[in-house]
Length: 259
Ligand SMILES: Nc1ncnc2c1ncn2[C@@H]1O[C@H](COP(=O)(O)OP(=O)(O)OP(=O)(O)O)[C@@H](O)[C@H]1O
Image (cartoon, rainbow, N blue to C red; front, top):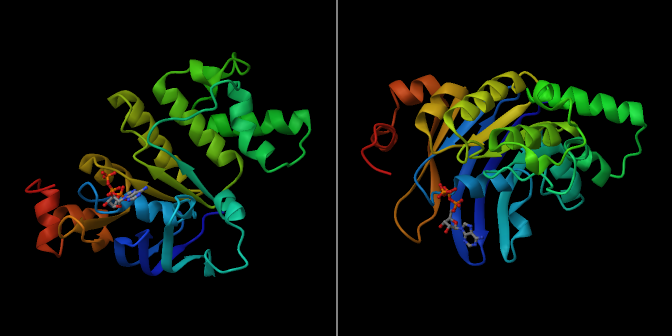
């Protein structure tokens, strides 16, 4: 389970445009790392390179390395589909498959992987992952109802259950709470805290309080101006980043002086 992620001199392109420059970062297993920074600095772009989702965009490519426990995810023999199985992703808008039941949503990744499972194994997987996502008690009596019938916060927890069901090593979350009310947000934050004992978690967030509440380490990205690439400015323990950052740029951003 939980694996270390390292990037080495990562440069990320959309066609000829270099959106992110020279990112080298080490992300510890069983920890939560927050990516923060102003709009357009490349947080989501960096996140998507960690499971090879970036290259799905036509013309997009990556230079440099992303290592998962030392193995280069971009080595020529590596199958990106296998990478995405190891490195799961949860998006800004909860996106359960609308016509599928709650139960089938949890099992969707396993079915896509063509893994044959018995009914009782499927039942166990559904229960275990819905419990893990703190959703079981709310849905156990309606597992065959459509996933789209749940509230936004419940749908996001269902998506987390779907992501964990394939037993990934890493969970990437791109602003997972931005469409949620404060109570659902706290539920997801509690869940992130619990999940970190099993996973390496990276979360993009615009919410400084959320970064300081949920993460162990924080990476601050910034951009020098339009058309310039985003860069990693500072990366440290979250407590230090929010109380005594080394760079003035970080302090200005965190204290709300820009961005
Ligand atoms: N599909 C795309 N095609 C071309 N350029 C893109 C694409 N997605 C992002 N970009 C560009 O890459 C840069 C970084 O964008 P990205 O979305 O990673 O920033 P971000 O920090 O996550 O922003 P936000 O906080 O607004 O979500 C921006 O200049 C953006 O316009």
